[in-house]
Length: 433
Ligand code: GLU
Ligand code: MG
Image (cartoon, protein in one colour):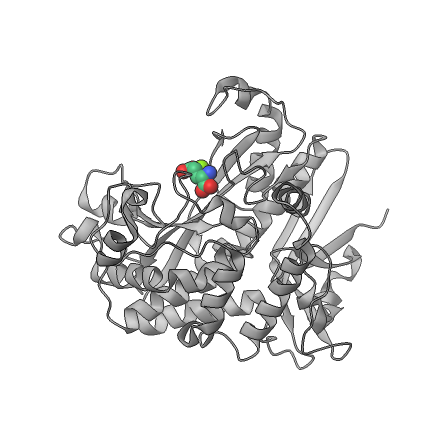
């Protein structure tokens, strides 16, 4: 049987789309890729096509990256996936290729901060068929019910060259969480894409269906994506920690964090980009509702994480901050690009992070919040898109056409759901993510 390789991009909708070709043609395809169409960028997560500037015109290539080649052998069948870059016919990166957008954010970070990013992703997902067991938040029975699935997933992750950290039965019903180790920026986002696909494939191979939807049921918990970030100097020494800095942050970390907080309301449409994302981003869900920096506080959008190391050098290596206002409706390249750009902006503007909070901000009145410089984050996708679209600084981080294309894309997704109630919207996202 001819083996097929599926070469894919992770697009504006956070969907992994591409085409397959015979493995025997790989050498040729590494040079010429497969044909791709500009308007594909306007296919929303429900397969509607938004208005866009391209129409039926234009041609692109989706070229597989040799080192992003994943073979998942499930015994009964083998799935081979390669991630790639979208380029123009002359081989130059296409302006709206999400991987290229992240690359340019990471280049900016090196340029303005002289640092490189290390990132580690935590992913929460739910099994749609599930065991239905109750009382199993972090429970052993909940874990054992899916031990084989978890073990297959970890094996697949390892075979893909990704370092697993841990896997657990999360708090929500049929909810699991898988955590992978830190990698440099672009690779970290590549691995997030691969991890989601391996999770979906593994679930299928076990007769299950995994969903990464931001929230299945407003009465239940959400599925978050938490992005841990730390920085490296050019000599690879850690640049994140300063024992005398506030909460342990170096000046660079403080400026980066301050930039993320300042622009958070305007980047949310890129990191929490579905209509139901905003059901998750409400107080007391351990997600993110305000633009606050928390010291070991899971209700913070940006959290200073604990360290277990004891000696200063090990602490400096382990120290990291965590962005919690993301979910898996977001393309990892785009979400990370938005956060990195916001951080770069903070470095450029020489911002200083506010005092980390260790309290419940939902108890404060709007006046008290405002006095302390906090805002409630946008509460709908429409509101988040408005903040994005009207913030010239933020849209300026991206190529000229990006903001218009992205907002039209999201508008078509919103229209698709306009006649549905909350339950139907949750069901629609659960099915597509
Ligand atoms: N499920 C929560 C979220 O939506 C996160 C819970 C946790 O801290 O792991 O982000
Ligand atoms: Mg979790």
